[in-house]
Length: 187
Image (tube, rainbow, N blue to C red; front, side, top):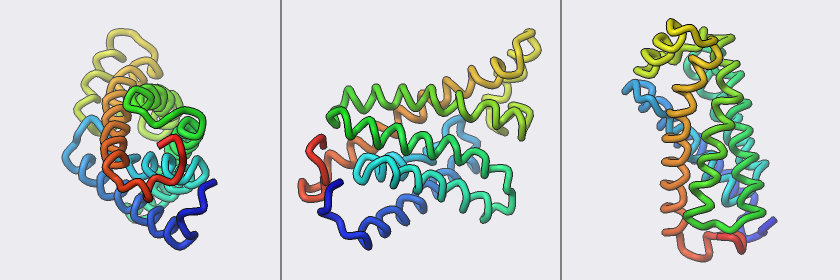
């Protein structure tokens, strides 16, 4: 692990990343967007500091969002955010930080997130999200598909857009950072 950032600096970056996740999650939820943008801080930290920092930021985001909102139903979705931090962190320890690899990792987490989140969403919310994509869920369910398929397919589409988009935005941000802020050789 790169030692160019002090533990205090890493904690400040992680705190800012959690705040970014929470703010973006609140804004997109309030606007009823069919995408989330609530893992950009997790992705950023996982790329810069590694999988365990990314997992911690993802988990802390869900925990704090649930506590602040007064609804603990978001806590199980920590598994999704933690998985994203781990996958992104390990991926960019093994592969170079290129635009193509960024898109490929975006596709990977865009698939993994709804695979983990769909069963949680079905258990907690009956498969609905409170966004416009619920129309697709209801249509698919009434067409005879299973609740998992009806809930998963719209989430897959939304997550692919969200995660690839989030990865590209973080790629652009990290690419614009001064070299001394890029802590390992793959970036």
